Image (cartoon, rainbow, N blue to C red):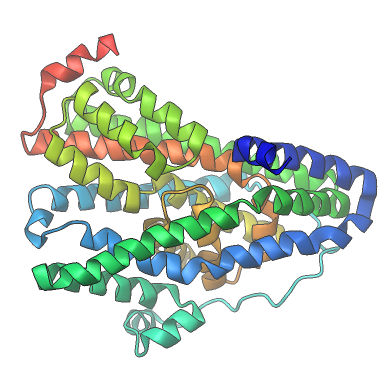
Length: 412
């Protein structure tokens, strides 16, 4: 029985749990709240992973660059493209959430909420000063995201500067990152049970309005990802790399298919590398460096979704956000996406960081957890497509591409 359960792909178990949860909530009504504690347990397990996952993943990702000199010709260009496209993606999510307002009109008065996080009301100078941690241990205890990210980046840079002497420490963080990914996968096995309980609670307590809002959120997630793939990545290939857009997407179709089915950038990494080298003509050195780095820090689909989900939570719970909050969300969503591991459910883990910074109730996570897997599949496809687009563009800029290989992509 147990063996049969684990033989079923996780996404199929999650979708089944989602449907059963909705039906149970519809039949059970408000009393379905009695099983919400199962979903709360799942959410607490997710929040438990935030600090160690960001710390180990970021340090390991920076150290994976291998040499500070690589940040020049190849690494520098790749990082600029990662950051710029990440910012465009998160502002796209904020724009879609503001204009189309997927969370508007939901009556949440029946929900017993915990204490709402207090928004950050400090000045710009205070915010700049706050990113330098006085005590890294206290930062981790308080889950202060910006100083945690700064500290993690500094540790990674320090490992690079130490060269051979930093290798033993790098191995520790590499191992830690792998271990945290495994722990995350263990927690993700709880997803079907958490989704069932949370969807039963949402359907039973809030009724059809909440389900319609969730459907809108899923639709906007797919729309945002498709816009990123078509216009941001397509524009990068056409105007920066000056290559045929159609041939590019034809060349990475295998990677897109695998990423959608697995919802994991890391699991898709070998396929993405093969597509970039064999179908797009990117040199092995550029493909290995940029795509491996991108699988760790290039999460544009996740960045877009974090911005969209934050506005969704603000709308359903009536939280007013200022333009300063929008800028804070753009920064945290981009950096949070960088810290997200390339495994299923990673975007869900990053939500607590962004929500808490602008005062959006963490109960929002319970709302979206039920449909997150459906959205995660499309976000991962976006992330993987971005890795290939950046690798191809950088290869063109540095003369590390065989254009004849892309022309022959008609045969793939």
